Length: 87
Ligand code: SF4
Image (tube, rainbow, N blue to C red):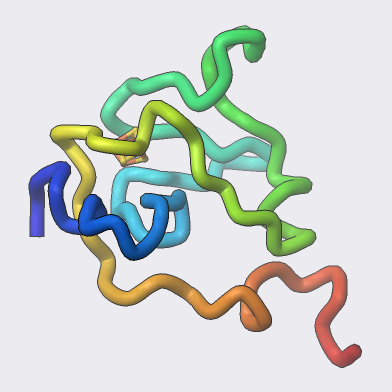
């Protein structure tokens, strides 16, 4: 479902776990729509380290984004990342 208001219901922030346009390439996560997650990053992408450790990945640019494409319910925090798996 496309549209920026899907996760904008006051229940939680829109995170990269919920948008189809958040893509992993090599060791970087980027937005397939060309938005920049971080202004201090050369291309706006972020390192995969935040994903591997299960961080929230809620960036300001995603909040209210008109191109947010909902992948469904958020991934539960305890199922995020893989560095702490099995603990
Ligand atoms: S919400 Fe917008 S900025 Fe964030 S990953 Fe999706 S398309 Fe990109």
